[in-house]
Length: 470
Image 1 (cartoon, one colour):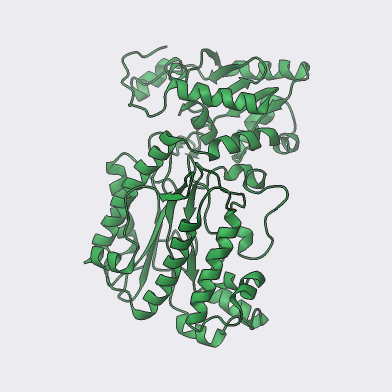
Image 2 (image 1 turned 180 degrees about the vertical axis):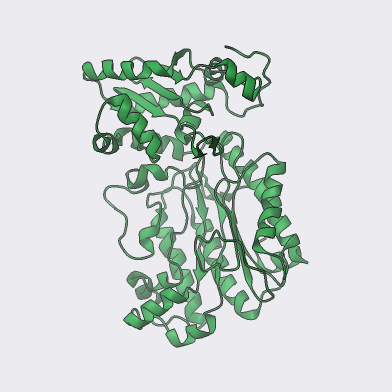
C-alpha cells in the first residue's frame, strides 16, 4: 500500500543519484547479477529489537532504510529490482503512517518492485542459466544464513563465495566521495564540534566519565544524529578501545574522547581529542601532546593524490619516535627504530582509516579493497593494524589519528623479553607508567592538490584547549 500522506525528510541524494550509482556499478562489474542483501531486524531478546541500521551498501545504492530488503542489479540487462516484504495493516497499526516499499522504490529510482518471497526463485533460475551471482561479504551471521537459504548452498560455500570483482568495483566507487557525500560528513563533523565544545565545558574533577559521555551524546540527539559507533570517554586512554565509563575524573588526569555521529543519510564523523581534567596540561603532558599534534598536522599536510597511506603512517611514526627521543624515552637512529617497529610500543595502531557510510568505511571488504596485490599488509606489530595501504585519490576521506600511549602490560612484556633495548630506555619509562594515552583525530578530505580538514575547527592546540576549558 502506498502512503502518499507521509511527509519525507528533505534528502541530499535523489533518485537520479541512486540510479547513477547503480549504473556505474553494473558497468564496472560487467556481467552477471549483483545481489546486495539488506540488514534484517536484530533482536536483543525475543520481542525487543535493537535500533535498525541498514547495510551501508544498500544505503549507498538506494538510500532505503527498510529491514529485510534486497537489491538485485542485472549487469547485462541494465535493470534494477527491489525485493521487499509487503506492507501490512499491522505495520500501520503499530508504527503509524510511514513510507511503504512503493514509496521507497520511487525515491530510489527503482521501477521494479517485487515481494521478498520471489527472490529465491529468481536466483534459482539464474543458477540454472549458469549466471554468476555477485554478492559482498556478509559480516552478520543472520545475513549469511539468509543467503545460504536463498542460494541453496552450504554455509562454507556462501561464506567463501563473496565476489572479488564486486568488492573492487564497489570499493573504488564508494571510496571516492562526491561533493554531496563530503557535505554529509561535514554536517556530522559540525555536530561533533558542538559535542566537544560541551565536553570541554563540563569536564572537571569529581565527575564520572559517564557524565561527560551523557553530555556529549545529548548534543547529537538534539540534532537527530545518534552515535556512529560506541564512544570512548575515558581517563584510561592507554586502553585503546576502552568503553567502560565508571571512573571518576581526577586532577592531573587526561581525558581521551573518541566519538562520532551519523546523519540521517548514514554518513559518519569520527573525532578524537585528549583534554586535561584540570583544564591545564602539565609540563609532561604538554611535551607528549605536542609530539602527537605535530605528527597529526604533518600527516595532514602531506596528504595528496598519489601518496601512499602506509608511507604517511610511517612518516608519523618517525615524527613520534624523534619526539620521544628528544624526551629521552627512545634512543638510537629513529629511522632504524621505526624500521624495526620499536615505535609501536607507544603507537601500536594505524594512522587512520577510510570514513564514509561506515566509520571504518568498507572494512567488510578487507584487504581486497584496502591493500594492493603488490603491496600486502605488513605483519609487523603496530603497522599490521593499519587499515588502509593504498595510494590516496582525490575524494578519499580519511581519519588522521596518531597517538602515544604508555601501556604498562605491553611495556612490562617487551622489557622482560629484552625487545628493542637499543631503541627504548625502559628505565626512563617508569616515570610515565600512569600517564595514560593521547590521541588526536580529524576527518580529512584528499583534494586534487592536497587536503582539507572537514567541518568547523575543533580546538586541538594546547592553548586553544586550555582556553576552551576555561
